[in-house]
Length: 142
Image 1 (cartoon, rainbow, N blue to C red):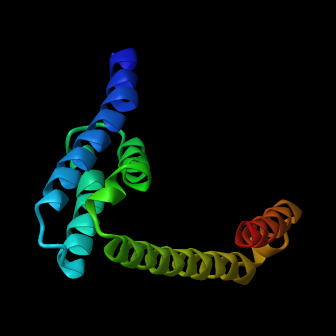
Image 2 (image 1 turned 60 degrees about the vertical axis):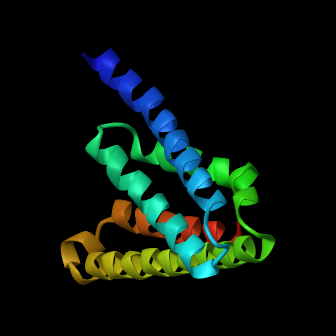
């Protein structure tokens, strides 16, 4: 049972992501090259891939990664270069917002640790806090 579940996740996720990417690619070939419609379809398909892969019990992460890889190499040719640049700008902005949310939540969690005196007096927790601080800044540099 565990091997079948692993295979379902490991093979089903990438196959589902590829299926969703090919479907969107074919849909984009027939659109009117309207940036709002194409980017909207792109966003809906990206989130839809994640949601539907959860519904079908395949790996959401692998499905979305394969979806993204397909569009970074082949799928972008279904869009005009102007629309592709707008889509990239949109995803960059969305990534920036997601990164900001992660840092705000990290600050809230760290504050929660510092307020609780039992936790704040633990050397292990201070070590984790310093490690988190280093990892956050290392991630921002990369």
